[in-house]
Length: 283
Image (tube, rainbow, N blue to C red; front, side):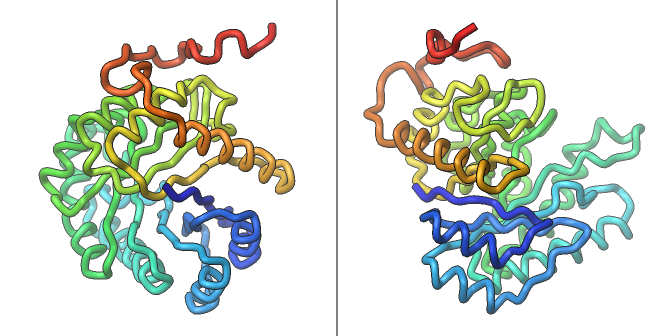
């Protein structure tokens, strides 16, 4: 298992790489988001090498890359290709993409088909640049194992980016994704929430059942990159939150497997306070 952090695209990328390296993290989850993030690939690669960091690529979640207008799709393809070339130049092997929900109202029922049609050339483009394209789970219908099975069947080079915080917001659970798509998981995001929104809280603050989630992930044999996607406006506090989260995840990861988690346990309802936290909260 490797634990890494995502940069804030509004801040200096170079300073953040140094901070992540000095804090002892394993990799950079490099997000390229609008309005613009430009950098010197060689300088980034030198900094990554200096601190022994690897890198994965994360793209703008707002791009309408599957919108059923050819000129829009072509513009988004060009931007994603630009990102892919930068990721490849700095040594990344994984490139994330988020589901595209942009669609004319009368075509909403074909949203999955629209995504699949655009994923085929995007995954091939990523492959040609030495990258694996991974699709991140989020909201309906991209919170369902069945949707991901369709996408992978139609775009076989595609793999899964499992965001465990997102599985707490509805749809299929972490256990469902791990049970049915475990061998397709190539990257993981962790953050906590209270099931009502994507809050990006420190691990243990919300109501995600982390022992069960980590147990399910471990049972797949996954041992790759895990990003702590925890947000905070103050840097000193952020790194305190991140250290607490890293320690929590590491302790759960090294725990011996028990029968309380994984595919043989009962599913927790979304939004329900998990039983493992009972007695830990006051009031």
